[in-house]
Length: 111
Image (cartoon, rainbow, N blue to C red; front, side):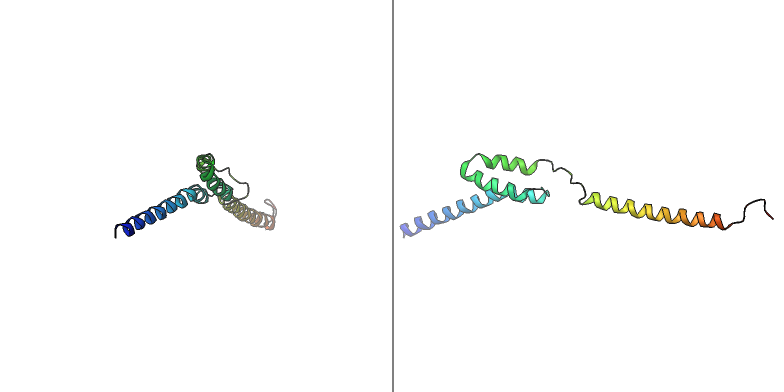
């Protein structure tokens, strides 16, 4: 009976250690994806290699938290640009309508 209990405890410890390794290895990749990092897969690979070497995991963790450079033509910048474009189109249409109205009026001072 004691041998079976000892084997069960050893097996449970091995499962918990494996689960901890998987959780720790995936942390930087998950952080990079959550922060919309431009290279989340590279961070993830560095994390897993880092678990084997002991060197890259802390670097991958730091890399996942580095500020992400703004991409030109992406995300909120596009939304702002589209809104500006729509506002300009609306303003041009207003100015064209005002110009047509002024052109259709007879000149002042004419009878």
